[in-house]
Image (cartoon, rainbow, N blue to C red; front, top):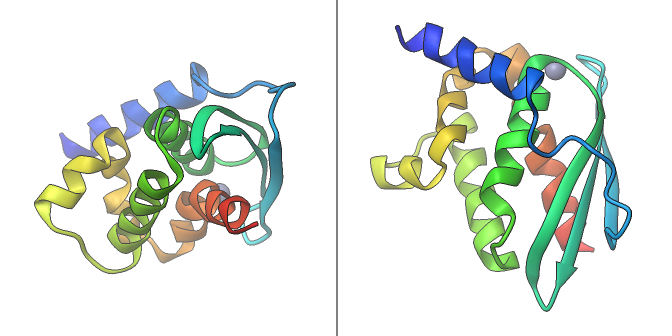
Length: 139
Ligand code: ZN
């Protein structure tokens, strides 16, 4: 059952992505590439007064990389930079180590990607959007 739900959510974000489009008024854009899978996305953010007021992604990649970027944008749009970085750290730890139940809940739908931690070949796909987010914010 869990795996069916996982596949449904991934498929839904690939067929009906909420945030896959150009963002002409973005003030930060950065390409993120995962050569091991061929994922190549561009993350666009519009940041004003430390708040991520809008965001989108473009590009191509596997279902996990695309769904992960889409779910990430669901989470971070409307948040301030510190909140977004905290979500990023939680997501990275969920994939690479472990998180508490409370932390898992803060990731909402993106928490379904916890299963990826058991699929080493897909880890770079799942973290691509979040890694790119971190690189944008550090600049
Ligand atoms: Zn991939």
